[in-house]
Structure formats: C-alpha cells, structure tokens
Image (cartoon, rainbow, N blue to C red; front, side, top):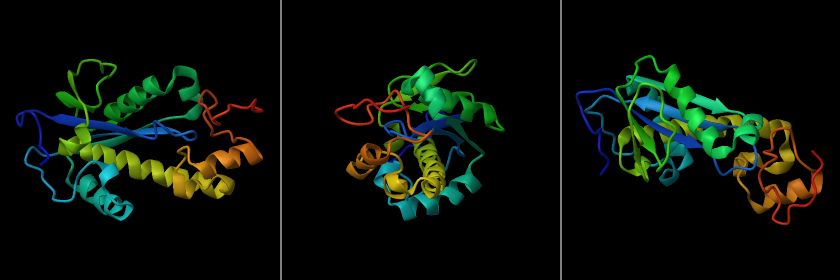
Length: 199
C-alpha cells in the first residue's frame, strides 16, 4: 500500500529518474506534487506497470497533480559529469520548473545532491512506497520512452523502440556492427569486451 505523503500539511514533491542504466540517450527525471489525499489503485513503481498502464496513468497524474515537471540531462553532460550526478541534475532541473515550490522533497534512492533551500528525504525503493515518487517514475519513464522512440526513427539499427537504449543483446550487436551514434554515452562500457570504438 503506497503512502500519500510524510506530512499532509506541506507541499511534498516526489522525484525519480529514468534511463540511468542505458547506453544511449538522455537521462530524464520528474518531480510531482500530489494532493495530500491522492490515491489511485493502479499507480505503483513504473517498472511494475505495463507500458499501456503507464501511458494511461500519465494524463491522470498530470491532471490531478498540483504541480509536475520533467528535467533532462543530455548524453554529453552525462559523459562530462558522470551518470549519478547527471541523475541528480535532472531532478534539480525538474524541481526548478515546478509552478509550486515544494517544502520538502522525497527522493527515490539512497543518495541525492541537496537542492538549495529545500530539505529532502531519500527513500530506497520509494517508487513503491509513496504515490508522489511513483507518479514521478511514471512521468520520467513515459517521457523518456517517447524520446527514445523518436531517436529510433533516426537510428533504426539499435532497436530502441524495444530496448529504449538499455544494454540488450540486440543493442550491443548493433554497436558492434555499425558503431555508435552521437547519442551514445561514450564513458559507458558499450561492449562487454570494450573494443576500441571510433568516437
């Protein structure tokens, strides 16, 4: 059973990211402030939901949320600052776009770079514990999937419509066969044997 919030008397924003373990594409994060009494029988950690259910929930979240936003960090930035810091930066970019400034942040995971002026609580597996984090996970995941589907039209060899940039066998075979794109993360282990790749 998911919880609505820690304190119903303040604005709490749940934050989560999508795409951290991918070999290609930007990392996306979302921040969502829900009403203190919000509940939904289907909302859960986005990884536990079908694609159809995630996309059905997205407009519900966007309509019911008091505020929501999505932040993006590019592959170039990921390579420059590392994926962990990029994930935090994506959350910061989402938070700064919220039309309501939250009093507190609920962060999925066990680490976070503090956002200036707003206290936070990290929650391991928080997307399965709090509605606001689950909502953020759904928005981050669906908006990132849309983005990867658009890239897949330009680069069909990598089957990004199926793997969304994650290191599947088909994705790695395509890297081995045709090389990399400008959207691959060059600091990642793109191939298990890490051949010398032409950047």
